[in-house]
Image 1 (tube, helix red, strand yellow):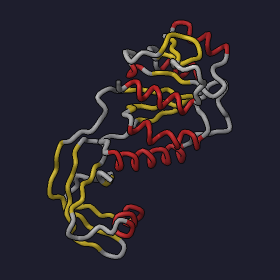
Image 2 (cartoon, one colour):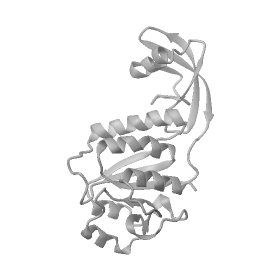
Image 3 (cartoon, helix red, strand yellow):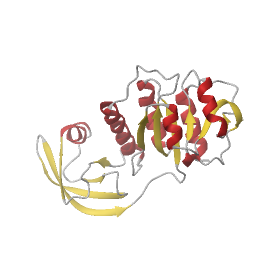
Image 4 (cartoon, helix red, strand yellow):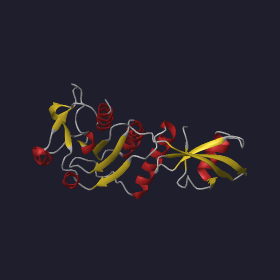
Length: 226
Protein backbone atom coordinates (compact mmCIF):
# COMPACT_ATOMS: atom_id res chain seq x y z
CA UNK A 1 0.00 0.00 0.00
CA UNK A 2 1.52 3.34 -1.13
CA UNK A 3 -0.86 5.53 0.89
CA UNK A 4 -4.21 5.51 2.70
CA UNK A 5 -7.26 7.19 1.19
CA UNK A 6 -9.35 9.55 3.29
CA UNK A 7 -11.77 12.08 1.73
CA UNK A 8 -10.78 14.70 4.33
CA UNK A 9 -7.02 14.24 4.03
CA UNK A 10 -5.36 17.68 4.45
CA UNK A 11 -7.37 18.49 7.60
CA UNK A 12 -5.23 19.17 10.72
CA UNK A 13 -6.82 16.25 12.59
CA UNK A 14 -8.38 13.09 11.11
CA UNK A 15 -10.36 10.29 12.64
CA UNK A 16 -9.84 6.77 11.25
CA UNK A 17 -12.66 4.33 11.93
CA UNK A 18 -14.75 1.59 10.36
CA UNK A 19 -13.27 -0.45 7.51
CA UNK A 20 -10.12 1.69 7.28
CA UNK A 21 -9.47 1.24 11.00
CA UNK A 22 -9.91 -2.53 10.76
CA UNK A 23 -7.52 -2.78 7.83
CA UNK A 24 -4.81 -0.56 9.30
CA UNK A 25 -4.82 -1.53 12.96
CA UNK A 26 -6.10 -5.09 12.98
CA UNK A 27 -4.93 -6.51 9.65
CA UNK A 28 -1.71 -4.51 9.10
CA UNK A 29 -1.17 -3.86 12.83
CA UNK A 30 0.08 -0.31 12.34
CA UNK A 31 1.83 0.96 15.48
CA UNK A 32 1.39 4.32 17.21
CA UNK A 33 5.01 5.29 16.56
CA UNK A 34 4.63 5.01 12.78
CA UNK A 35 3.59 7.77 10.42
CA UNK A 36 0.96 7.40 7.70
CA UNK A 37 0.80 8.94 4.22
CA UNK A 38 -2.73 9.87 3.13
CA UNK A 39 -4.36 11.27 0.00
CA UNK A 40 -7.81 12.64 -0.78
CA UNK A 41 -7.34 11.73 -4.49
CA UNK A 42 -8.41 15.23 -5.53
CA UNK A 43 -5.62 17.76 -5.06
CA UNK A 44 -2.42 15.85 -5.92
CA UNK A 45 -0.94 16.25 -2.43
CA UNK A 46 0.53 13.55 -0.22
CA UNK A 47 -0.23 14.30 3.43
CA UNK A 48 1.82 12.83 6.28
CA UNK A 49 0.18 12.22 9.65
CA UNK A 50 1.39 11.00 13.02
CA UNK A 51 -0.71 9.24 15.62
CA UNK A 52 -2.28 11.27 18.39
CA UNK A 53 -4.39 8.43 19.78
CA UNK A 54 -5.31 4.81 19.01
CA UNK A 55 -8.31 3.25 20.76
CA UNK A 56 -10.12 -0.04 20.23
CA UNK A 57 -12.51 1.53 17.73
CA UNK A 58 -10.80 4.53 16.17
CA UNK A 59 -7.52 6.37 15.72
CA UNK A 60 -6.82 10.11 15.72
CA UNK A 61 -4.14 11.45 13.39
CA UNK A 62 -2.35 14.80 13.43
CA UNK A 63 -1.05 16.43 10.22
CA UNK A 64 2.72 16.95 10.22
CA UNK A 65 3.54 17.48 6.53
CA UNK A 66 2.24 17.95 2.99
CA UNK A 67 3.93 17.43 -0.36
CA UNK A 68 2.70 18.23 -3.86
CA UNK A 69 3.28 14.90 -5.57
CA UNK A 70 1.18 13.92 -8.57
CA UNK A 71 1.53 10.33 -9.77
CA UNK A 72 -0.28 9.98 -13.08
CA UNK A 73 0.30 8.53 -16.54
CA UNK A 74 2.11 10.83 -18.95
CA UNK A 75 -0.63 10.39 -21.59
CA UNK A 76 -4.38 10.72 -21.08
CA UNK A 77 -6.59 7.89 -22.31
CA UNK A 78 -10.37 7.86 -22.61
CA UNK A 79 -12.01 4.48 -23.13
CA UNK A 80 -15.68 4.28 -24.14
CA UNK A 81 -16.84 0.75 -23.38
CA UNK A 82 -20.22 -0.79 -24.13
CA UNK A 83 -21.78 -2.35 -21.05
CA UNK A 84 -20.70 -5.95 -20.45
CA UNK A 85 -21.17 -8.16 -17.39
CA UNK A 86 -20.77 -6.19 -14.18
CA UNK A 87 -18.30 -8.73 -12.81
CA UNK A 88 -16.16 -8.28 -15.93
CA UNK A 89 -16.18 -4.48 -15.52
CA UNK A 90 -15.16 -4.86 -11.87
CA UNK A 91 -12.36 -7.20 -12.88
CA UNK A 92 -10.73 -4.78 -15.34
CA UNK A 93 -11.15 -1.55 -13.34
CA UNK A 94 -7.90 -1.99 -11.34
CA UNK A 95 -5.93 -2.81 -14.49
CA UNK A 96 -7.24 0.24 -16.37
CA UNK A 97 -6.58 2.44 -13.36
CA UNK A 98 -2.99 1.18 -13.07
CA UNK A 99 -2.44 1.65 -16.82
CA UNK A 100 -3.31 5.33 -16.46
CA UNK A 101 -6.74 5.47 -18.13
CA UNK A 102 -8.07 8.94 -17.29
CA UNK A 103 -11.75 8.32 -18.04
CA UNK A 104 -14.00 5.29 -18.60
CA UNK A 105 -17.37 5.96 -20.22
CA UNK A 106 -19.86 3.09 -20.20
CA UNK A 107 -22.76 2.96 -22.65
CA UNK A 108 -25.50 0.55 -23.68
CA UNK A 109 -24.85 -0.63 -27.25
CA UNK A 110 -27.48 -2.48 -29.27
CA UNK A 111 -25.95 -5.84 -28.29
CA UNK A 112 -25.14 -4.95 -24.68
CA UNK A 113 -26.57 -7.13 -21.95
CA UNK A 114 -29.59 -5.07 -20.92
CA UNK A 115 -30.05 -7.02 -17.69
CA UNK A 116 -26.79 -5.50 -16.43
CA UNK A 117 -28.02 -2.32 -14.76
CA UNK A 118 -25.50 0.26 -13.58
CA UNK A 119 -27.11 2.27 -10.80
CA UNK A 120 -25.67 4.57 -8.14
CA UNK A 121 -24.92 1.60 -5.86
CA UNK A 122 -22.80 -0.10 -8.53
CA UNK A 123 -21.02 3.16 -9.36
CA UNK A 124 -20.14 3.53 -5.68
CA UNK A 125 -18.75 -0.01 -5.73
CA UNK A 126 -16.73 0.79 -8.87
CA UNK A 127 -15.30 3.86 -7.15
CA UNK A 128 -14.37 1.81 -4.09
CA UNK A 129 -12.47 -0.62 -6.33
CA UNK A 130 -10.63 2.31 -7.93
CA UNK A 131 -9.73 3.77 -4.53
CA UNK A 132 -8.18 0.48 -3.43
CA UNK A 133 -6.31 0.31 -6.75
CA UNK A 134 -4.92 3.82 -6.24
CA UNK A 135 -3.79 2.92 -2.73
CA UNK A 136 -1.90 -0.07 -4.15
CA UNK A 137 -0.31 1.51 -7.24
CA UNK A 138 0.20 5.06 -5.94
CA UNK A 139 -1.96 6.87 -8.48
CA UNK A 140 -2.87 10.31 -7.11
CA UNK A 141 -6.29 10.85 -8.75
CA UNK A 142 -9.27 8.63 -9.46
CA UNK A 143 -10.21 7.53 -12.95
CA UNK A 144 -13.41 9.29 -14.03
CA UNK A 145 -16.54 7.17 -14.55
CA UNK A 146 -19.76 7.99 -16.40
CA UNK A 147 -22.68 6.10 -18.00
CA UNK A 148 -24.68 6.74 -21.18
CA UNK A 149 -27.99 5.11 -22.07
CA UNK A 150 -27.29 4.39 -25.76
CA UNK A 151 -24.80 4.64 -28.61
CA UNK A 152 -26.14 7.84 -30.16
CA UNK A 153 -25.90 9.62 -26.82
CA UNK A 154 -22.24 8.77 -26.40
CA UNK A 155 -21.45 9.69 -30.02
CA UNK A 156 -23.03 13.11 -29.52
CA UNK A 157 -21.01 13.61 -26.33
CA UNK A 158 -17.72 12.65 -28.00
CA UNK A 159 -17.80 13.63 -31.69
CA UNK A 160 -14.05 13.04 -32.17
CA UNK A 161 -13.91 9.55 -30.63
CA UNK A 162 -12.60 6.74 -32.84
CA UNK A 163 -14.00 3.19 -33.00
CA UNK A 164 -12.42 -0.20 -32.41
CA UNK A 165 -14.05 -2.77 -34.70
CA UNK A 166 -13.21 -5.93 -36.60
CA UNK A 167 -12.45 -4.02 -39.80
CA UNK A 168 -10.32 -0.92 -40.14
CA UNK A 169 -6.73 0.22 -40.05
CA UNK A 170 -4.33 -1.28 -37.52
CA UNK A 171 -4.51 0.68 -34.27
CA UNK A 172 -1.40 2.93 -34.14
CA UNK A 173 0.17 4.32 -30.98
CA UNK A 174 -0.17 7.78 -32.55
CA UNK A 175 -3.96 7.89 -32.11
CA UNK A 176 -5.23 10.72 -29.91
CA UNK A 177 -6.52 8.44 -27.18
CA UNK A 178 -7.69 11.40 -25.09
CA UNK A 179 -10.52 12.00 -27.60
CA UNK A 180 -11.90 8.54 -26.85
CA UNK A 181 -11.86 5.02 -28.28
CA UNK A 182 -15.21 3.23 -28.54
CA UNK A 183 -15.15 -0.50 -27.78
CA UNK A 184 -18.16 -2.71 -28.51
CA UNK A 185 -19.75 -5.64 -26.67
CA UNK A 186 -19.00 -9.34 -27.22
CA UNK A 187 -21.35 -9.50 -30.22
CA UNK A 188 -19.81 -6.48 -31.88
CA UNK A 189 -21.75 -3.51 -33.22
CA UNK A 190 -25.10 -3.69 -34.99
CA UNK A 191 -25.54 -2.64 -38.61
CA UNK A 192 -27.31 0.50 -37.49
CA UNK A 193 -24.44 1.43 -35.18
CA UNK A 194 -21.89 0.89 -37.94
CA UNK A 195 -23.93 3.33 -40.00
CA UNK A 196 -23.40 5.91 -37.26
CA UNK A 197 -19.63 5.35 -37.53
CA UNK A 198 -19.27 6.29 -41.21
CA UNK A 199 -17.58 9.59 -40.41
CA UNK A 200 -15.40 8.11 -37.65
CA UNK A 201 -11.87 6.76 -37.69
CA UNK A 202 -12.15 2.98 -37.37
CA UNK A 203 -9.31 0.79 -36.12
CA UNK A 204 -8.73 -2.86 -35.45
CA UNK A 205 -6.41 -4.74 -33.14
CA UNK A 206 -3.45 -6.28 -35.06
CA UNK A 207 -4.16 -9.85 -33.97
CA UNK A 208 -5.83 -12.72 -35.77
CA UNK A 209 -7.53 -13.72 -32.53
CA UNK A 210 -10.84 -12.24 -31.39
CA UNK A 211 -10.48 -10.47 -28.04
CA UNK A 212 -13.14 -10.17 -25.38
CA UNK A 213 -14.20 -6.60 -24.65
CA UNK A 214 -12.26 -6.45 -21.39
CA UNK A 215 -9.09 -7.75 -23.11
CA UNK A 216 -9.50 -5.12 -25.84
CA UNK A 217 -9.71 -2.42 -23.15
CA UNK A 218 -6.46 -3.51 -21.54
CA UNK A 219 -4.78 -3.74 -24.96
CA UNK A 220 -5.82 -0.20 -25.97
CA UNK A 221 -4.86 1.21 -22.56
CA UNK A 222 -1.41 -0.37 -22.92
CA UNK A 223 -0.85 0.89 -26.48
CA UNK A 224 -1.87 4.39 -25.41
CA UNK A 225 1.13 4.67 -23.08
CA UNK A 226 3.70 3.58 -25.67
